[in-house]
Length: 400
Figure 1 (cartoon, helix red, strand yellow):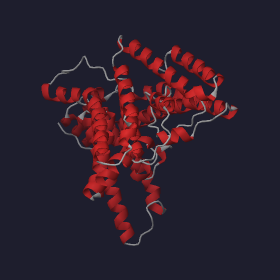
Figure 2 (tube, one colour; figure 1 turned 180 degrees about the vertical axis):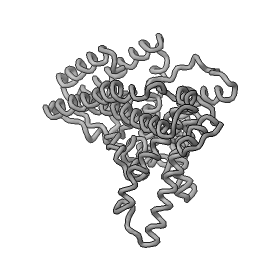
Figure 3 (cartoon, rainbow, N blue to C red; figure 1 turned 90 degrees about the vertical axis):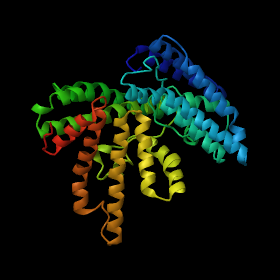
Figure 4 (cartoon, rainbow, N blue to C red; figure 1 turned 45 degrees about the horizontal axis):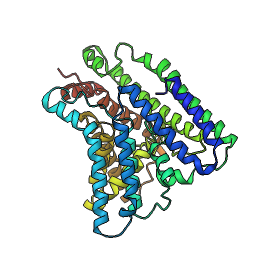
């Protein structure tokens, strides 16, 4: 929606109205404006308003049942489980059932289904809220603050996956020039990434192979260097696109005096796969660590199984397609190999992998590993054999 002038008009008017109101009304105002914008956006995109009212119903249910899940005992735990399952089922219906049916039936069986705006971010924030309320970690349960958090206009469709406690603790009480200047600067950074670096500089470098389908169709005429070039460009394009939207979201929220969690910290500089996942989509990785990895550790006592479960969840968060699941498994394999390598070095009394020659070679090897992984997602829609053929070409092999 950032291409729409209306988006920026609403943002500017909302910021002005927010700061002109007394402090006690600001969260209610922000939640109301966010809801109104989302209703308009859904109608503008689909010609109807169906999913946002349902999401609003989920929001009310999670809020009203908060005091129930906060109580000790089996019944509250069952209510918590039902809330989480209901939210995940709603997410699955829109995001995962259609691609599964398409794979089984060979055509898009649910072509009429439109994925609701921001459903993945929305669902994960609701689950986070319910679990932390059940754990007793959330005490401030103001309805206005909760609605503003869940529906927050700047981050609803583009993230980051903000934590409720962080949201409550990082709201400015007064308008400050530093917040406005920092917010505007961050928005400008995001716009430059998206429309200058990505659209004007990176996109033209794809040449006659702008997507996975074109890459496969021209594969017989492409060299290994060219395939690697496509992989690196795809990695850079994904980083610039994702981080640009995060910049825009974080900068827009800052105009309201709200400091949202960071989502990217120069992942292209990572020197190993563990370091990469401390820099890439940090709020998603943190959410999955808290609500997938740790429960799986408790259930299996196997860190490697927990790693695979975590990265499969990260892949599924992006899409229900087999290519994104494969992407998650690919990164899980890399992370397990890295953890095993680090454990062996510790047992032998070697220096940490962050030093010396290992660090020197770590950066290009990590970049190559991540770039090759993005080939999997770029080839979404292509057959498994075509994906194998493209990967083989990375290693100078030609498969017919």
